[in-house]
Amino acid sequence: MQTFRKDERLRGKKVIQLLFKNGNNLYVAPFRIIWMDHETNSKHPAQVLISVSKRNIKTAVDRNIIKRRIREAYRKNKSYFYEFLTSHQKHCIFGILYLEKAPIPYKDVEEKIIIILERLISEYKRLYNLH
Image (cartoon, rainbow, N blue to C red):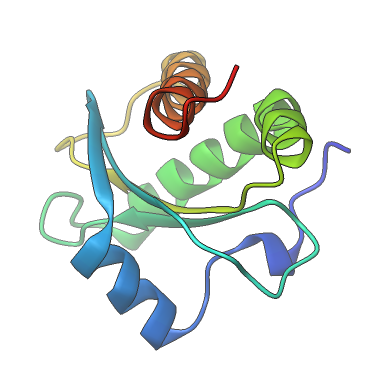
């Protein structure tokens, strides 16, 4: 299950606007996560949006490297999060926004993505009284 398919990406202007308007925020430096529980048409329990600001990272090459690292770390570590969502019949949409002014190494990105997924699980448990 270590894939990252097109229908796992959050697309659609209305859904993205809804996420930014009504979503909950988490901050795990250098990432800001906006998430919400939202039923999707996707067969996957979660959909993700990855964003790197042009204001902070000037060159497209660096922005693409960062997005590639985030996607790869997410792809490799999402299985536990998917199992949790599936077992509780929940669906999650979330955005990962990169806030740093320079690229960070892949190892650091992967550590932060793991922390983010664990925090999302704990937020679900807290908000919906899940065990």
